[in-house]
Length: 215
Image (cartoon, rainbow, N blue to C red; front, top):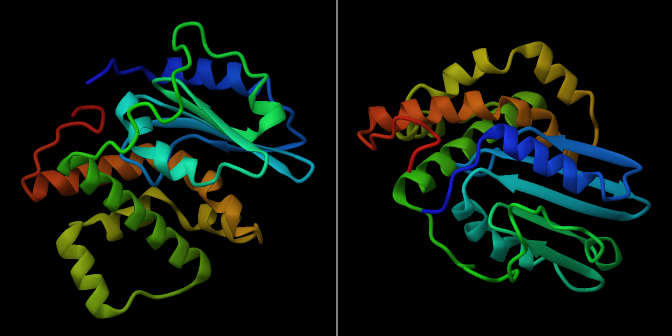
């Protein structure tokens, strides 16, 4: 396992990267609700182009996500990465980025294809379930009884507790945004609480994580 970076470091690095990118509009990510790891990020929109910046606490998270991001490359889009950061966008923008001095650039596909541990996979799946639950509330959709029972067995108490983590007034704010692509960034600030719920659920199922920061 590589070094684990604190949230303050993530904040510093993501700001240093985003300050180099043209942004007419931006979505701020306070966490990654489809990953087990802690993250800071931006989507920067300039004209018809979007540049995505992500900085993770664990280098393993980037290793696991590189293949997914590589599928978006080509047709003028490029990607660069370090141990803890990844940036994908128009080649003319990405090529001018200066890498952080304390996390130098490595080959984009270096260490790609990494498999998550059982614990990481559980926390990721649980977080994605929580996002689905929030999205159903935003759309005023109901979960089928059989599905609800299944998810309660898989992620004990998460569906119920997520309602207290994300109150109805916050759901209403997201509902007012008609562009659903912006919902993940709007919900991202609840990431730490969601992952705490998922870690609790994992403990109940004897996966035994004691913190979302531990491996």
